[in-house]
Length: 331
Ligand SMILES: [Zn+2]
Image 1 (tube, rainbow, N blue to C red):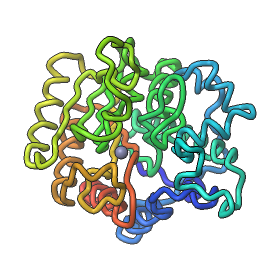
Image 2 (cartoon, rainbow, N blue to C red):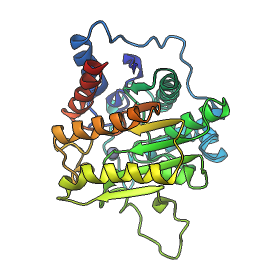
Image 3 (cartoon, rainbow, N blue to C red):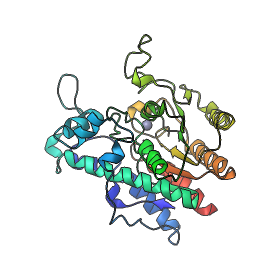
């Protein structure tokens, strides 16, 4: 099952935000697979879709932050999250003159996407596999959004399913180029959710704050259940590390009721975000990554759901499209 609806795509430029997320990343991918498999692929009906509620957000975030999203604090929360202001107060990658929509409306779009992430997870419990062409906001922390991630749809979705008694346990397998720091912080005291993060060994977010050895509570450095840093030039190790880390999770923990794959395409060598440039996997290596995870979970009969997460510039859609083409051929 592939979840896609054009209305769920953010058009950042409508808000004056100049992040190199190709506005047609999901659309290009969807159009490609739709053309190849017209019988199997259709746009999801989102007409009755409601955004994540305040109660949903409180499953992951603290009261102060959640409240700020529903009052005049929302613009500031978005400015922080999307890094739109420099230290000297000037705008960064943001030109309010280009905006055709008020920034606060972006929150509503994000909460709608977050709900679609949840529905995709719920769907995978029935059909074993689902892919949502959106979501994956893994940097959002309990106390606020950052790194282009306003709310953590991954943890919210899992906890919503737990509250509905549809699952007890879940793993988050995060293969975005950047460490899933928000997911790690949010689940550090939750033994029902295990997190695996395979990411660049250096760069953002690992260098986002000075490491404070005396302050082990520094939220930026909370460890995932398993962290696998890959350093520059170590791309050849990537596949082996992925395999070993999944096997390690399996050894330590019981089979989960659901796995959410945070399927960032930003490790791609053609990705255009400067802060993702320390990891350069080829298209072939990325297909090997995704199909390995897919078969590993399928063999174990674990429901799996994928979220797009990071992927920047003109080529990022290719990574998602090749994997979905593989899945559709197989099914
Ligand atoms: Zn990323």
